[in-house]
Amino acid sequence: MIVVENLNHTYAGTAGWTVAALQGVNLTIKKGEFIGIAGRNGSGKSTLAKHFNALLVPASGNGRVLVDGLDTRDPRAVWEIRQRVGMVFANPDNQIVAPVVEEDIAFGPENLGVPSAEIRERVDKALNQVGMAGCQKRVPHLLSGGQKQRVAIAGALAMRPDYLVLDEPTSMLDPAGRQEVMQTLRQLNAEQGVTIILITHHMEELVEVDRLLVMDRGRLVREGTPAEVFQ
Image (cartoon, rainbow, N blue to C red; front, side, top):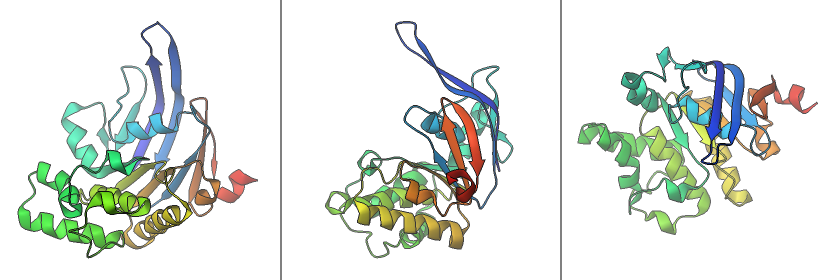
């Protein structure tokens, strides 16, 4: 599980100003859950998400984050944590790095030194998981927005993560693309057992999550089932 204990994070600017992005956040996410995180802009959602895979690390005295018992503050554990926790952001164009779909999905495993035969297996499986089997040779920039985002998700899945964190993955998509991505996430959670942590401003996307967290001004102010929170 992912355990967040008394997590604080402050951003400091060049002119001496500071912003408390997270204030005393405590949270436990169990494997297999589908978690939704909501909150207005600046509430701390993205800052919290970046702590899940050590893109941000608690400074001394600012709490801690544990991923399956691995402390994100430990430099020796960072690569193991990032294999366990995949990240997908709002703009898939910022995550797609290769001119061919299969090369993009293979990028992460190649950098881990995974054998070629296993990379081939991972690429094919990841594309199948996101409903894009047979698209290995497609050119990413010719895909629709929803297809690009599914390729970005496949790239994360090729790392074989236990947790998949998605920060506004549908914010740049049309309704059809949003539906494609949400259907993919529901299937990954229900059929593959991948833990999903979804950050979104679209409330209709949060109706079917297992647990909904609400952030405000850096604090976790409410959590429960969608029915409990929306009431």
